[in-house]
Length: 223
Image (cartoon, rainbow, N blue to C red):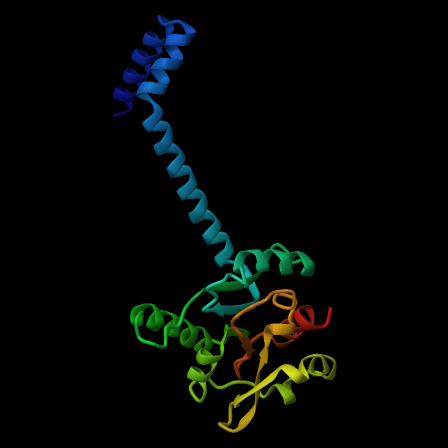
């Protein structure tokens, strides 16, 4: 095969040598455009795979899910970059804000809802979810199913004072009524928006990165 490639390359080289510059350009653009596009696609794909492997090896210091954000108030990638730059992360660390989840409680997108629900449950099961931001109907949907932190007990005084009037009730990890969510309307993401949907942040009972989550809440509500 190598011999055939060398022979083909030699013939193409000889053919190009007989052409003028303009003819060479026309020949290359006519016969090699598909090859160039294919090579570019391969390079892009290889880069994507390489980046995914690199990211998978990094330590996640904070992970949050944003769901049902039809108006893109919480653009995951943009928020990741903004907050990661603020933290001045080390090379082996990363922040993950996933805005791809959606829960359709009216039953018109059952497969998507099931996939999103499975992702949340699986992430919590392995202690990798720090918080979730979602709409009130979805928050109520999870009431009693996903154990949540009692925020009046969990939050330090400075954050609690900043969000006291925005707390919303639900069931804590013991199944008792408690303030388990924060209305995001006064957060840095929505305070200047005329949002027609209310979003709430709740914290799973088995949050893995408490200190990082508290700093993120300060970023959202205190600065």
